[in-house]
Image (cartoon, rainbow, N blue to C red; front, side, top):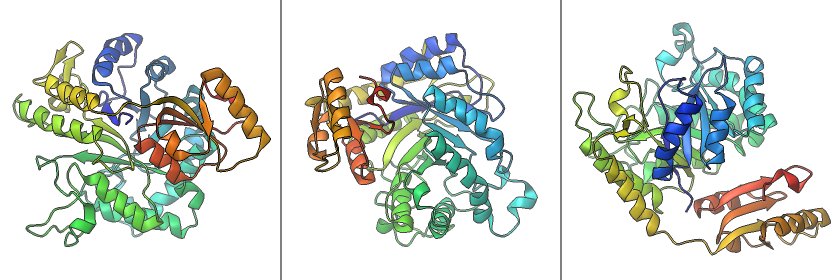
Length: 400
């Protein structure tokens, strides 16, 4: 399947020079990383050459703007979002950990209706992102948190459904953090259905909760119950962290090798699109330096190769795709425009053309022409296909 694996870059909004790109691309390639979470600000854009350099290497950037809740209005951020969209960026995530008191003004946090006020602020931004062709993404919550994350997420999704935001929910993705917190990798496996005794703010002795690697399973169940379907999930930071005290990171990397095997296998939920290990690197004086995998591009921390080896073994065990490219048309479509597009694209890329999602699953790359059911898209992505859509009036919008 296509790699879900990625990294959270520096835990700051600097280090975006051509030299930085040249230094870190080989490291990302060595892991087969397909995603990179990059931090930005609402005041200025991450340089276009850095982002384009990632995308040219097949690495999708996820831009995370961690502004306090209410600090940025849609009208203020619109020029920035337009710039990112025009450069080919697909995801810009606004805000961070809205279920923490520290993310809000004190007077705002203490007022009633916190979730509804959160939605009031985010809805204009999400709808603007849809207009610009970006993926609207729910900001990641702190597992547990001052306002229990599962309760916050459920309340927000039910609030969107109650407001009739079906068009948004059809496109919405969920950001998340999934740390192991030193627990076994299968902690919380099965989600709330496997651990029905767990409740917000209370995990009975002998039970398990979402605060572990399997958090995506809990969020998938919540979205299924709240809106009738599992929403795509992007882990913007996760994995096992070494102890804050001392420099012994070997145990954490051993556990992260297990995380890598889980990501490359079939056990992770189908809704999980990307998982960014935290963090690729950090300045030595940064508070997050203890978590960095690399002190510098040529200076990995202890046992990084344990994770590389796990990835290599998992990659070799995957079944290769038998088709390079498949153009999937809506079932039994007779639309001459779609068939004309399909013919032009097939001529340029030697692609197979058909109506069958089962056949499309055999291809490394799938181009969708016309409307496609969200479940078909999710199934193709889970099968490891790189999925792209033609939504414009010309097939020239898709590279051969």
